[in-house]
Every structure is written in C-alpha cells, then in structure tokens.
Amino acid sequence: MRALHRGFAAYASVAALLLGTAVAAEVHAAPTPSEEPVVAVPDGDGPDGFGASCHAVVEGSRVTAHCRNPYPRTDRIRLHVECDPWWDLDTDSAPVDVAPADHATVTARCWKRVRSAWVTHERVPDPPPAPPASDAPRPSAPPAA
Image (cartoon, rainbow, N blue to C red; front, side, top):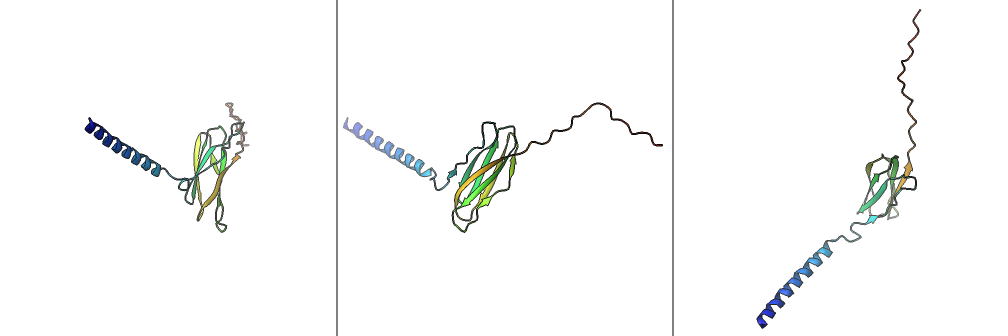
C-alpha cells in the first residue's frame, strides 16, 4: 500500500511541475504592455449615425490605424501622431475618405517613441443631386437656311 502512495505522489508532483511549466510559458508568451500598446482612439459615431470606428496599434515607433465605416455617409479621417522626444517631429497624415461599408488603414511613424496617437473625423459634403433624366425626345436643331 505504501508503494502505491509513493507512486501516486511521484505522479502528482510530475503533473504539478508540468502544469507550472505550462502556466509559466503562457505568462511569458503574453506580450507586455510596452511591447505592443494599443492606443485608444475615440469612435466618431454620433447620434446621427456618422463616423468610422477606428482603433490604432503602436508597434515600436510605427502607428497603424484601422478604420471601418458602417454608416451610409463618407467619413474623411486623418491620423495624428505625437512623438515623445522634443526634437522628433509630430505627424499628421493626409486625409483619407472612408466610403460607406468600406475600411481604410493609415500608418505613420516617429523616429524614436510614440507619445500619443488619435484619429479625427470630418464629414464629406454630399455630392450635388444629378439632373433628372427625362425620356422625352430632345428638340432637334432648326434647319439650316
């Protein structure tokens, strides 16, 4: 009976050791906040159903903003990046139009570190209405004299 107890204790200790190793490997494999911080970007959607939903990811000195527009109006977005060292120039991207049911990816970078990043939204004016198409025949030109 004592041999059975010792065998069980050996199996239990090996199982605990393997479980502890697996948990430690899982904790070590998870990225630390300094490795891949996600910058919070406020959504542009308001009560009238406008604004693409965006999120930005900072990887080292590079920022990538992913925006998706679920609304029926076009949204013009810009990515703004504030760099950490005083000598590093801040960046503003060119405007990008995100059409309804479309997505856009905008990137920017700093030389060293990123302090903050955000996306701004602007309404794109609606195009003027097209002239009505009529099925009536057009008047012909008067005969030449």
